[in-house]
Image (cartoon, rainbow, N blue to C red; front, side, top):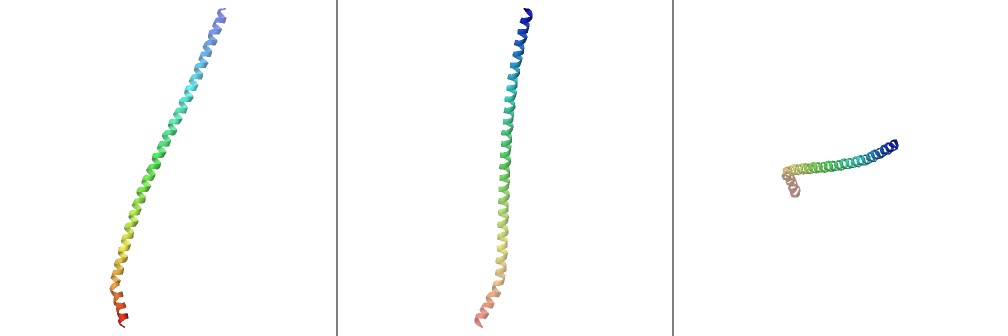
Length: 101
């Protein structure tokens, strides 16, 4: 009788241990899912920050390049005007000579 009682107690303890192990496994699985979710969320935020930083850098470089090209264009135009203005009196004189001639 005592042996049967001990066997039942042992079975009850074993069942309790099994239930605790199942509960612990479920808790650990949930914790793992939560950790993965947080890691993915953090990675997504870092990806967004990297993309935003790259876009900002590209915009800054683009604006700098635009300004550089504008400066070059202004310099080229100024140079062409100076060349044209330097040749203008000679061209006018030739036209006037032709018209008089």
